[in-house]
Length: 126
Image (spheres, rainbow, N blue to C red):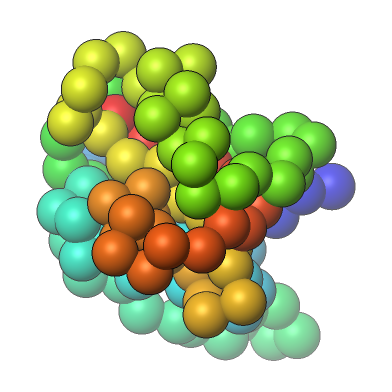
């Protein structure tokens, strides 16, 4: 089971249902992706909650998400290929983000241009 794919699916389904809050299973990587979504304005606040042996993120304030999903398999991408990847996964220029894991951490397609490094594709949100 892919925890990140499940989390993004839960967020998308709750947004489409008109709900403003949801609960997803917590992991360190999911937390890093949620931090990016929060920074970019796609979600509001989130906090980690323990319920017995299980940890969850409670997400409040689901923002302007039309669609989100993971990219499987996590293809490697070079810095020079970012434009082609944006054309493939995003509906138009400067609309949405692609989340990429790099040796310098988890970043967006906008940040990877300033870092000038490659990485592996993780997810997209628009």
